[in-house]
Image (cartoon, rainbow over all chains, first blue to last red; front, top):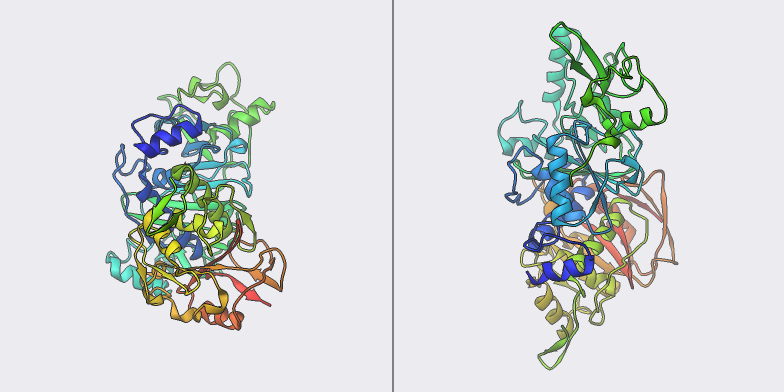
Length: 315
Length: 201
């Protein structure tokens, strides 16, 4: 309590008085910070950590929140996205959580954020060296479906025996003529560790390669932290005759006309009507603010698809 | 916060333990994720001699009762051990291969790198992190660093590495993903040297 009181005074912001700065106690932060440094030293290796109970259920981003809470300071500006959107329940809750327990600024603008916590997307807007991306991880172990035993998985990583995963991908090709994994597509980090990129669409996998910002991964339920330092080699697994490819769309974004972003398919009525919109709500909003117009933008645009900038944050 | 313990002054830790360690952690996180970059820590505690302020900041930020610490003879003074025991509560060990952290205040007294714990095949994260105090991180013999965290290559000019260090580091590199990680400190600055980094003289 003494520590919290002092921090609040120093930060000069109204932090919920019952909490230490950023919610976690200092011993927990130290433990997580040590794990983060080891994770950075061995890119792609999953460091076990003592995941704490958080005031929201496992599966709602507790791993990402604990990582964010351990790195964030009063000078940081936090952006939180859920499947690319700033205005979904998970994103709004986590942003409000940190506004309350750390008294920090929050934003939905990618360029203004110093720390971006994300669930299942990497922002379309390129990130910079002075930013940190924190990814929420449901299932950190890429080998788990193929080898359920934890000790065996550790040996697989220890001895770099990743043949099983190649067999899995090969079986896809044998059955379907192509690799059918479209999200959580396994990557090889620094030519050594096979890693789950989290359930981001494989569209985002190439962004991880030589990414200028530090990427940190937190799995709360599974109690693992891992990292990709800046400019690290990240390669999606593939075969010479079946090279890795990302998905493409015949449509452009119905609201902003973007042809280079990841699109969500949205059903608009009961007659089979649908539209494709950018999953990254801030990217889409920014493009529309700059005057880009998609085929469905205008008076008829569904109300849920208004630009993120108009969204009242509530935090 | 300053007081007297065992007949000598006990130096205070961070003025604000919460935000002080947060700020120091972000500094060392930047240093470890961008090896070769000299990062000056902005918030520093008063350090007991012979520790540099940056070394003391790392201790206050990262060490506690979970992290056995090994100290070289130069750092084994009453004021340093009392400071670390009071502020961090970390056990001090005489065996380098049982230590999670090691503080080397005098490079000439550093045991060979393979005396420290490199971790094991199943848990390479359980290796020792060696904090080595340098004469300078600004000038000295030139080192070229390559590896994760570095766009092409990084040049560090550091003075005070122990004799034969490059060979020891090359041997440490061959253990990857096992291996010892290092943080070089001098005065208020830190430079990260994670095991993933290749060093050339």
